[in-house]
Structures are given as structure tokens and as C-alpha cells.
Length: 211
Image (cartoon, rainbow, N blue to C red; front, side, top):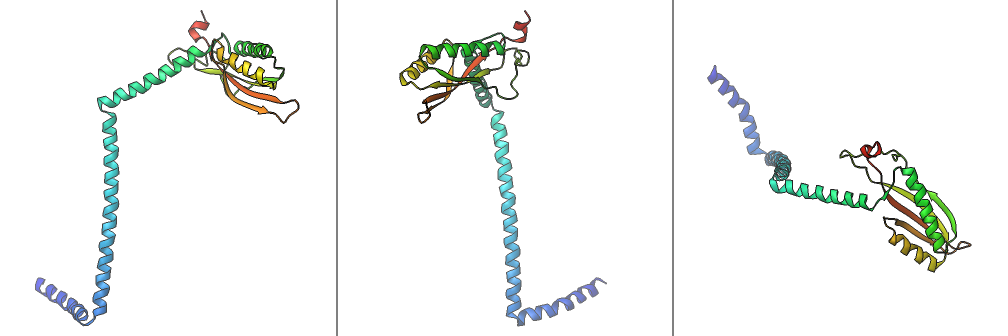
């Protein structure tokens, strides 16, 4: 039975062999097909190699993060963030409540503008949406208050000497009172200066508030 199968196979292949010997076009066609299959295999292999390289890079990055030096780098970043947060809190205006801080800062800005002989056209609070107003909502996981700020929009009649005096006094304040934006509108009547002010606020923690 096995010999008969081999004989049948040879009979089936023989015509194809004869055709290949006689037809140059057929040989070229088969060669082209083989070349295409080979190129497709190379492309698939290249894609797989790229995937392997990407996976190896991810593993190396994960390994680097687990090294002792990487842990020290993360600790250094955390310490830097802690210092920045502490500096913000130290620069903040102390207040028992955010509303009291807003009122105090409005009074402070009015007095500074009056001392600089700058008539106030507008003084308005600007409250970002969703801001917490209670000390309990502002508590951090470490029991300290999260950084918050009072935002004020100040519009005064433009007097260049007075404006410079106001900016100097803002810089001299015992706590930070920042100018986020300053626009001079000389074409308006009278000419005005618009200032967006921001003051960090240091609120008590929940534990301090209930004492």
C-alpha cells in the first residue's frame, strides 16, 4: 500500500516537473511567490523583534525603578515637593477661615491703593469653582491644611508713579501677595491698570480648629 502511494505521488508530481522544465514563466512565477513569502516572513519577524525590544525596554525600566538609587531619587523628589509645599504654607496669610482672609486682604489692598494715591475703580473677589471653604475640607492626609489662595481683581486709575509704589508695597508685605497679571489700558478714559492678585492662605487644620 505504501509503495502504491509513492507511485501515485510520483505520477502526480511528474506533470508539474515537466511543466516546470518547459515553462520559464512558471518558474519565474513560483520564484516570485517564494520571494513574497520570504519577505512577508521577514517583516513578521521584524515586527516580533520590535515587540521583544519594547518589552525588554519596559522590563529594564521596571528594574531600574526597583534599584536602590531609584528609590533615593524618588525620595529626593518627594522631599523637594515637601519643601515647596512648606514654603507655600509659610508664605501664606494666616487666617481662621477663608472668608475672613478674603475680607482682610480686600481691606489690605484698599489701604495700599489709597497710600499709593490710586483711585480704585474695581476690587472684586475671583473664586475658582469647587474650592473648599471649610478647614475640614482643606485638611491634608498629614493633618495640615492644603494650599489655598484668595484671588482678587483690582482696577485702579493709572498713575505710573503710584502704580510703581503699589507694586513695591505688594512686594514688601509680610506674606506673599502675588501679581499674576498686569494690564495697562491707556486708551480708556481715564487710563486704568488691571491687576490680578493672588495671596496664599494658611488655614488651621481640623485639630487646631476644634481646640
